[in-house]
Image: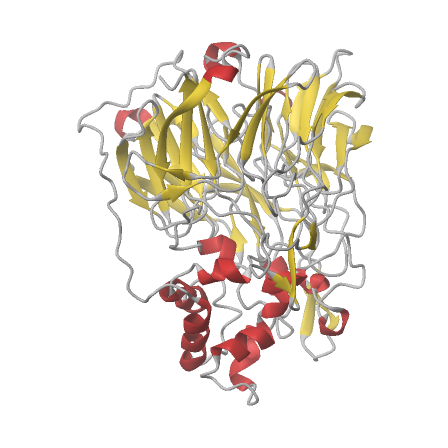
Length: 636
């Protein structure tokens, strides 16, 4: 049986806990405070047992210790939703949900510290993967000289070492490789600096909230050895720390909204950090007593040496205002949403920074949601907007049964966000293009030099709330390589995962026949160069969905799947060159018990002849994990 780390789901779980009206429980006299099961069934089950795709399953909540469930409601992301809960009700829900005894022994941690005094002195020619997309144009393509790995080497890749994330059962932050070290954040509010060859720990620091962004390294006057690491957390903070020691140089909060997050890696260009913010207010909207919604996405430019905000531009120019009341008499607000989930794209030559946006959360819908946006790099002024899906106002309330929907916008959009960065490419014609796929299942190319005019679009899937293109693609000089999610659920087959999750008592599982596949599309035309379907699911309840960001090197493309497999494909014809199932237990270099799970969000990172990948991002029906894996040729 696959081992699952049981501590601190942090954001991924608490973001969905009790979203269907927890704030009103204390006032509901028909529900006894001591009856945790009744409280859960009345207020939580409709989301956690099948109605909301992104809500972690009931069984996953059971893997949280009681203290983490209490913390989620008292001090975590559900604090706002649980404002009316009595202490006895919080305790009752925690005791009912958790299958973990109150006191859990901790395993050994930090047993593999690196030798003290190891210098951090990066060289210009040293292999690296810096930030999200390896360059400020977000190509996710690693050149041969930096990769140190050829397509011919790939079949010989073997595991060299594994590191377990302590106090976590999710792994989602993409690692950065720079100066012979790995920099990576965790759901348990730790940021690590590791030796890239051995996985020993140079330093580890705690942050205010979980760190989901990739980390960007840059030169910094005043930092030890002259280098700083920049990243964001899940409470809207951006940090600069000494890359050599982890000492915090500065921390800047980008937005006061209680649901704000920084998910996309900061982009460092010209001495400034460009950082977008998103939020989980889309989740808060499912609470019938919540005044949905007031968050607006934004892009900020920060002075890298000081953290001072040089400019901040909202993705929606109009401030939220009252727009009516819901059926419970609660005030509603709008416009809202259009968060920036991905890492911005910098274009220093043309003095522009680009970002892609998510959907609106409430009415009225705006023309800057689900869009490519261009900002003047010096002033932050919005230069142009190119929208791909119109009238896409949506929040989690729209996923609830019709009689329970109170905050779902009238436009009730399809939730076709962009989670992918825009890739800036040069075309053979001499023109340029910004290319990105959306949750609609459509890949778009727009002209950045013609106000975002559409150049081409190509549908590769049907799309959906967990469908389409989720987290990003990779591009070389000829093609863009795009993975498809389109995850779906179905009634569970006998004995597979029956009883693990349920929709009103009916067992279900992820559908093993719908979703997945990798496409190579011609950058100039959008024509399909090749398409390789997912090879099929062998494990019960698995999904062929390929949600993780794609990574490319000369001659090969890497794509991770919800089934836990990382696969390498030939860039010329799509043949599968290598397939590794990450979903099993590992002996780790730091002594932390660890297992792999679903691959999602962050993609593989390749530098210096090694490949690194996190395993264990999960949602309803997929598999938890807490491990960072490092591969090399023959494991040497």
